Length: 160
Image (cartoon, rainbow, N blue to C red):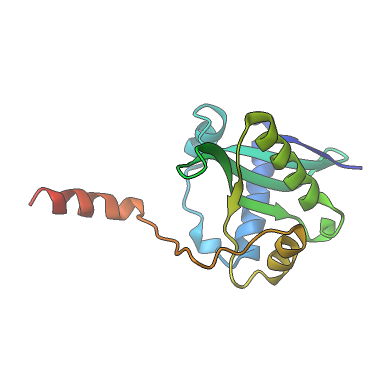
């Protein structure tokens, strides 16, 4: 039996191990650039994001980072699921489905209108799971990003 719940601050070090595993699974190990102290503060003090974890016998086997969004067209809040990771040996046990059920309940409790997330094109296991959930692949959108390195360039461009 497993439990899905919000992470506790004293579990942070265990969470970092899952994040490393997630990065390796997605072939993005070079992508981890955060300061651990700042990361911890952003989750537990500033509440920039929330983290659900799945525990089995006091062992963390899955995590899901999410944050609140807003849809102009719906006029409602929503959830953006930043990352969902289940350790390989615990997949196909219904854990990811239970995490989605928890997120859906959070949406219902708060009057939110949707859950959005991204999935790597190479993540066949994830794609198959999301399609079985009944999620819609939004092919009409392109994803864009400005990174911290771009901020000053853009701000300085506007001053010329």
